[in-house]
Image 1 (cartoon, one colour):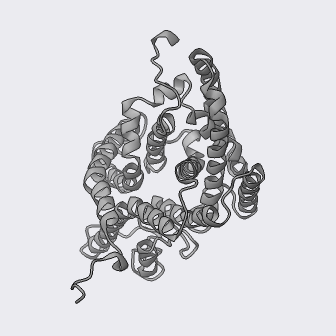
Image 2 (cartoon, one colour; image 1 turned 180 degrees about the vertical axis):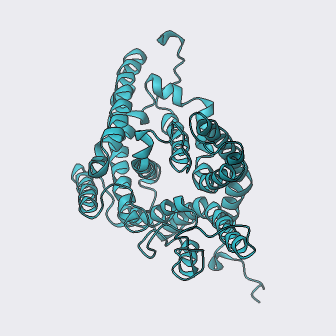
Image 3 (cartoon, one colour; image 1 turned 60 degrees about the vertical axis):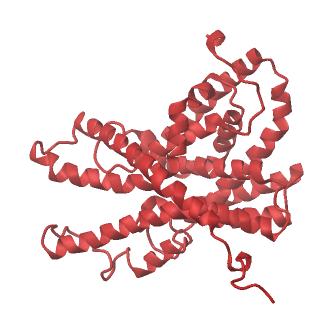
Length: 394
């Protein structure tokens, strides 16, 4: 079996192909998790307990940020450039999707006003008394402050809470790298202790890891710090892995990869509720093992299809909920005319497959026509202090 696997020169690239591939796949898992009709797939315990998957994104972000930027922050200019770059990466698509959800909120108001939509029991329309989606939550989305406890629930584009949490975590990361850059084992043990302390506190406050609009920044920081520790461990272990023979490396990491996949899957399935707060060792092991791209699962996750899914993963993550809502409405208004139980049996599974295809297609478009050009536009904006004077001095 190993004879047909082509091994590229090891350790010569900073591209973590397997981790990137998992990023694309897990974005689809999140899209499945947020579907609101029945299917055999989204009813699996794996997806019912799937909120903890998000913590892998946080840890992966911490891994990449530390690995790529450690030693790169020497002054305030470096810090400002970093924040601008991350803002350019996150905000344009976030703003675009917020506008979509704002339009959807206005459409709901209009549909009820003209009688197209009927008022359901307990339904509170946006921008009315008691509504969770009002002018305050609108402002919090525009300022990326919608995941720091200002709101009492998720509003507008629900997954966008992670964008707010991660953006604030970047400032904590900058503060650490500028004034307390971790170098020694003790430094990283301290980071680990802080992460564990956060999980312990959240354990006391919440029933599970489905923590979004209130303590999201703390949740993100804990995962982020675990990722930073994984990056340090990767650097320390990399020279030892590089001297392995190709055959030894692929056998060793194939066993490790299968083991962590099984362990992580079993953890998600059987460790719901309070047990989810013990996710840290699984995050650390998953990222550290797959960072080496050494085994057969890494080779599989490095395929072009997963790299493509990784490329559009942010778009997938940000666009899928509005598509899920549209598919649910379409199913209940159109498919229900053909069958009242349109989502029973295999019908919901087929609808799920069509939905995922649409999510991928839409994400491809938003990546190329919103995400990339929007990011470029923000990066090219110059601050007033760097702008050229309008007139020459005499």
